[in-house]
Length: 600
Image (cartoon, rainbow, N blue to C red; front, top):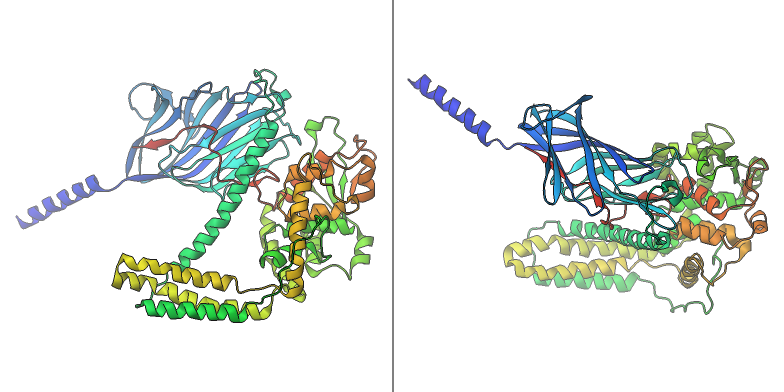
């Protein structure tokens, strides 16, 4: 009887455990291939890998109904086998439900504690809008409707045929770690390690309107307004990234735990911070801004040192600007060998960076260690010992840049010490000021434990302590006095790079202006605006490092082509939204959504 009772108990327990076991699913991989057709439609293939915990028999995708845009042509595949369109919920079948606000596509299967990959195919009709000056595609490949995160996301947005062109623009919106690249055939590749639940991933791509003759035109010129809108989103995204970094630092300080604290200890720590701040912070007479705009760099130090002088940290644009600086010095040159008659078929395989060995020998004593390391990396590692490397080879070397960056920035910081940008005594004060700031942060949790939520007002004290600590580090007098001139130069260059700006730049220094334009965060369109103010003869005189071979069908340098070739070279290691391609901006959300999905 006892054994029977135990058997029944175990059976009931097993059944209850099975019944109440929490089941769930994740999407561990998502590969999307989308083809833009000449009629303005989009053909999409999604390969979704679901990892099921527990038993599942049904999954679905929802497609919202949008005015003017229609989803259709639905098909479901698994392991190359097509599912049948059939009512009911038999395995290997799917159904299409037409609802008021959306279309549901559901498919049936049997899965338990396993991974399954399903292929969902569909067509998006009337997606491309043809304007007077461009054709626009604005689409969310992942909509906010998804209640689960999606990992290892790769999207290829390709054209109906290879249409490489300098006239293709694109902007990516979504998680900050998502990244996009314009490929040589005109395709756009998007990679996102993870798209969180209730988030979206969308692309806005602009193509020449002549490629979509069959699509009715809106009659409006939209290129400039779209560029302006995306520039605003990019600026907000960069600020949001900086804010996120700052908030993360503050959270880490606030998470510290201590035994106990009292308001008196907080006050003592605060007074300690004040004492350190006023003892170590250097104070110099205020330097007024220059009366006239500063139109040239105030110092002739290596441009890569600028961010260390200005912000006491690198801004990760130094490598990109260093490439142009080496060209400015004459150590390398860019050769445009493209002989394509059709500008849409231009190939970055025929644009090269070439090492000037004789000039290198003359510059040997003037080049920094990180300059030499950079040249060795380009022509030794990437070009495998050759004296030239195509932009195409640059783009293929993504994985090698990461290792090089750490070596480069170590050498950069070591050499910057010679300039003594920042006062060493004030740095000592900053380090000492961290102590009272950290101690006061550590006291917060015990204070709340003993005194309740009202003690949270004490958070203002460690905040003040860290502000005092952060503002203790001071520049040396030389660089304190020179800073206003750098601020003026930065503002002047940004203003001069705007379309139609009246402020003119010294053409003799146009090469170094391009170097600092990258450092100041200016994008491809700004570079094109700067170059657009030069005549054909100016390029030969003031940009001798840019060479068009005689065999090339181009007769004169093209500012747009040069800006595009620079962007393709620098885009491999640059992350800026819209300008040189790269990182996703956090804004957007205006694209047509591809909907969400789920499983049960």
